[in-house]
Each structure stands twice: as C-alpha cells, then as structure tokens.
Length: 231
Image 1 (cartoon, rainbow, N blue to C red):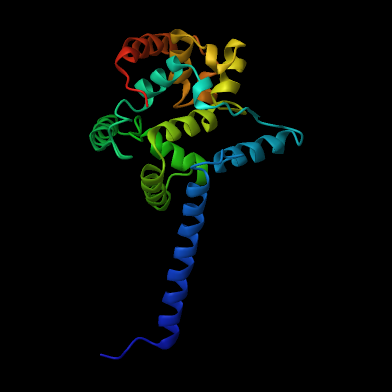
Image 2: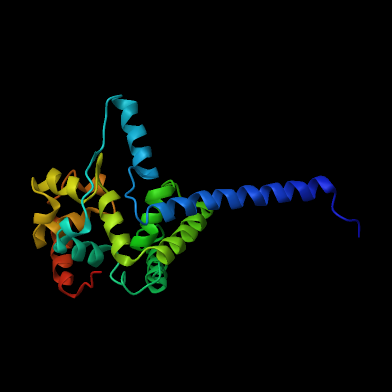
C-alpha cells in the first residue's frame, strides 16, 4: 500500500491545527467569562445587525445585574419552565431530550427542544441560531466546558442576563422594566412565571403576552415553582 502523499499529510495537519485553534478560541472565552461579564453575545450581535438593517441607529435594551439582584421568583420560574433538573445534570438532560424526540416524532415536526439552560447559554454566547449537526456538535462541546469550569450559580446568572426576552430586549433587568416597569429584583411570582413562559419564543409571545395560551402556561409554571431547586 502506497503511503499518503506529503501534501495530504501537511493538509490534514494544518486542518487539525485550525480546528484546535478554533476550539481554543471558544475555550478562552468560556474561561474569561467565568469571572468577567459578557459585554455582548453572538446572538445579540446578530439581532442588532438585523435591527440596524431597518434602523441604523437601533440599539438593544440590556442592563447587567448581579445574581443577588434578580428575583428569586424569576430564578425558580425559569428553572421550572426551561430546565427543572438544572442543578442535578451535568449539562445535558438525556431523559428530557428523549421525551422531546418522541414528541417531535409523534407530531411530525419540531415542537419540543429538550435543550438545557447550559446548552441554550452555549448557543447564545458563541454560536448562531441556525440549526445544523455541526452547530449542535459545537454547542455540546461548549456546554461541557461551561459545566466543567463554571458553577451552577454563574451559569444561571449569565443566562438570566443575556437571554432574549423580546424584540431587542435581553436579560432579566431589561425584561422586567419593559413588561412591568420595575427592576428584576422586584418581580413577584406571577410576573416571573409570565416572563419564563415567554422564553421559547419571546418575540412571538410579546405580541400578546396575556393570550389564553400564555395565561394557562403561566398558571402551570406558578404551580411548579415551589419545587424548583435554585443554586
């Protein structure tokens, strides 16, 4: 059997080096954000670029607040709505993913995601919202790093400060002021539950935040919040 050409060996070595450098770039950000608060995210940058196509002066509404200044009700509500095993899993809820897959197969379309808070954070911080196997693979790698390097309190703090909560609205503080005119620290249980229910599709739900569906889901999350474990 003839040995592989030298150019092929060099090409594969160069490709491997590029992949390592790319992963190292992601890892560097994960390490940095363990202590430093993200000034922006990949998802926010994309939303801002979209907004400025319509209005060159468009700006996002966002204001970082520390973990202690976010209502405990909101922490409980988001965990209840998005990831009820958050404090126990290591980044992936395999049972939840299996249930989501079965539900999607039954419906014949994607109606459930099964992504944990850690997975959603990995995507929002560094990746694009486009759906592909490559992006999901990268999301999984970044999720592992986040879970290994950050504690659950930091993961939830960053998530609540960067997640989208409406058109141009990011983070708990901006959301609380946008929908209720109060800081995130003052959200009561009902307000927190309603915000949590918006998270799967905030730009759609903000058009009618008091629809029958939203009211029903809010009551459901309110009933679950008492059992939510918060870091």
